[in-house]
Image (tube, rainbow, N blue to C red; front, top):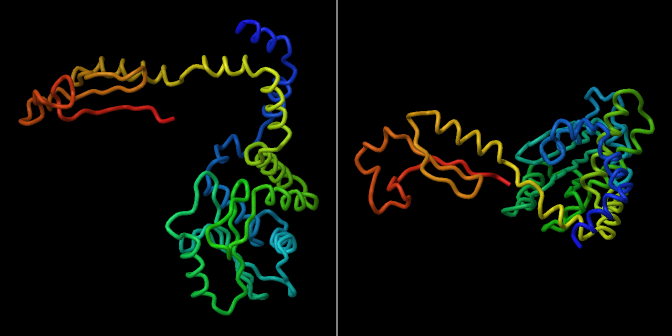
Length: 281
């Protein structure tokens, strides 16, 4: 039965080939490992807000953001952008229109320790005479603990970038396109790739579950290399392993130090101190 399910999957590879085709295109943000790095996203969004940066479209992103979020900008803005001021991810100040926009950005983490309330208190104390706007940016538009903060998702950021890219060209347009595509691939659960994945899984569930069950655990090469290095070093002693990934070893010279060896120790060798290498999943 299992072999039949696998044969059916192999006989109908068109869906998998389509997914591979869609995800195999080069993307600079994926290539540089920025997808899950919260600081890099904040850097890039702050870069787009800042009219003084090298993107060449001035305050266009700021104006589009204000327009989409119903923030009134009556005069030609003078925008200053700060990153990590008082630990706030993105702070945008429009000196002419007396506006302050605060963005707290979360990728794979969540708010903690009354974070949003503390940031709001700092802003209100620092800019008491400004019109203040707070935005809680997450992948899926999660609800903030402080209802003064407005919800915004990365899908919203993608729409802003697509609007902006219509008026740009060259390298800047390419980078904006890469960022929008990266958001769609990784932060939007209902994109075309996700829909295709669910369709294939529904059709070939048994085969795919079997493949997942027998996928390589990973780390074997590193495990073997660590064992080899320990065994080659005469000053070290392999004390034990757990499974096929965790390795524990000791420095032989330390065995002679009083108190370092005991018959009631937590290790089989009696050592009270070991070095360990464990996998991180």
